[in-house]
Image 1: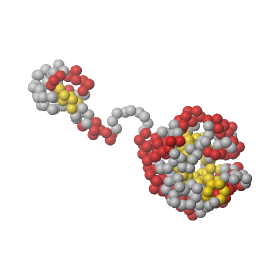
Image 2 (image 1 turned 180 degrees about the horizontal axis):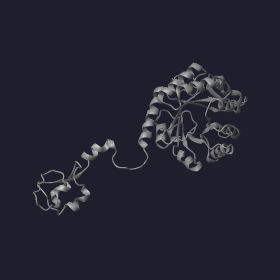
Image 3 (image 1 turned 180 degrees about the vertical axis):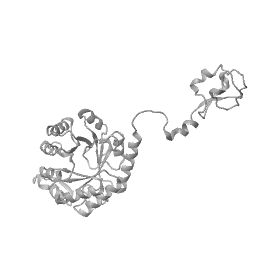
Image 4 (image 1 turned 120 degrees about the horizontal axis):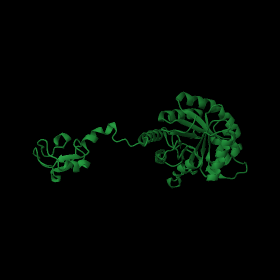
Length: 336
């Protein structure tokens, strides 16, 4: 499966740890994501002992505990993976996850068609190389990363024989202020590395994601929760089911509105306006049969059923083939 979408933005509901270690809640969230029209439900697979050093003294203010206790409280149990994957398949959406250790790559390989490399892991080249070696789609978030670090990550994928890479612009703050999102970096990465690009969006609301879709994002990833008032580190800045549904609706509208870029003239929907709202040459006053048309006899008005205004110089100097009443649009058969 590739994330390069020409007419369809791949919308990811990032469930992450917002299941609160409840399998029924995780399955309910998959259902809600599918009902909202998301393309995928994404999780995160990590374990405290392999994520942070036991000597890490960082305090996050969560239940008064340190980061290790926090991680332990929100880990996705790995025994859930087959059921999560099967439920996504039943609901017609893609299941995938971000692996944070080598074992997670191997466990996910059996149940998922793609891997996500989280922003903080972009410098873990062995992890990236191992995931890429599985030959599946690689989505790599570039939060915190400079161009050299992104280049290293892409090189690791390509060295493993994997060219199916998508880069996500990201600001690694939770939540992120719109002013640090730098959506134009998507195009910079697309041009520099020749791969599809998208956005991992941690801002509040949905408008930044919609803007990214309008700018050509192939993938939009947005944290998802059933209720922002739930306890946990990622609920407060996530979007709820109604917001996810609205995000999908707006992005699909944007995709439809972008079109193919060709300028063809009026669409079928515009034909009524084309006939009645455009201007054409009209008689500014009554014109008798045989009269020589002068400029002051003409006026440009709606509707556009008559001769186009650009041909006014051709009309001037011709004779009226019949009486032309005031305000009538002038057609070719009225002239000699």
